[in-house]
Image (cartoon, rainbow, N blue to C red; front, side, top):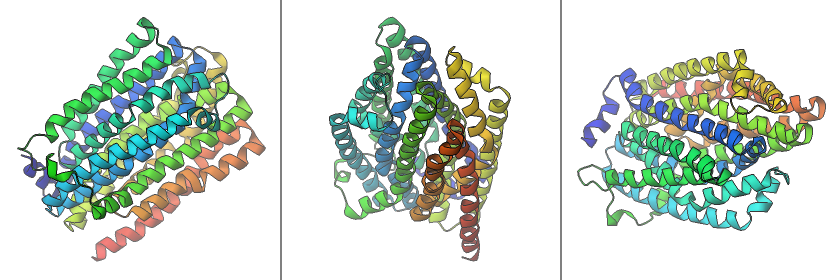
Length: 447
């Protein structure tokens, strides 16, 4: 069964494959994003508006955790897709084992180091005396469960690479449902505050990680866990980390950007402005998760066909993913631009908070109709193993242009300068990504 579902990547119609691989990912990713939104709503109404600001302060550290987790998880999943396309199943087994071992090592090191210096890190990320108590309480529990979280995410990426998008979807939806059940219970019934929200997150992911294990321990599958695969191989680790460097730099750059955003908003707007970014961030991710779901569906299709040198199918998959991603973000643009106050009011009744969020929502969503193209192109280069190009494109959007704009524009436009940085950097990075893609497609067509 496993071999059939994998081989179809090179023979089945692209439209059908995108539906099969993307829809489960989109459902799962959107469900996860909706959880994050309801999580913020529970915290905003059950703990207070300032707790949302504290949660926003924790975003950079959570992004950094994801960055280190993706080094092994996403890098290994991409490499796994390519090896499956080459029908090198022995190497694929070793890659699975290396994903597990490296994920555990990185997760433990990250948690230990971060917990030792948690307060200084949070202050560096823009926490104030009013918000650090919430950020600290939340991140302590998240970091204690970091290894399980990374394993859970890594398994999900691997499931998709092995031709099991439905199981990956069920895994994420299961996490979301458990999480949404535990969150109000811990916050409103047990009065655990923001710590209850963090506990709900870790517990739900741990439960579904255990559920995932049953698939990887099943010897009927083509790729499964056995004792012989747990030895780290330098060649495999090097390739995994090389590919994983792209999402690592994406998330690390995102961490730096959020720090700069928090500093700018805190300086020119105060704690409520920082909390407003928390709302903007949640809503942005709701629609970006659709694009990420499309990217996750595209990744095994592109990886397999590129590995099999079926470049026509590779290019067709890319074009159709770009089209669908653009449609999704146009929809997000319309919703937010027409109803920004309604969106902000879902999270809080604090008028100052709402006003700051409305400004941020309108300006950040301004380039949504075009930015999906850049995001898909970046993921495309990663999916074909062109990690250096993918890293460069990631840095153009998140660091090379965005960070300087965040440092310069607020000096002239105050809090508006922070928000202006989003659409300007998005527009410039799109031009560069499109140019890089043009030359890559020209090369593929000539091979």
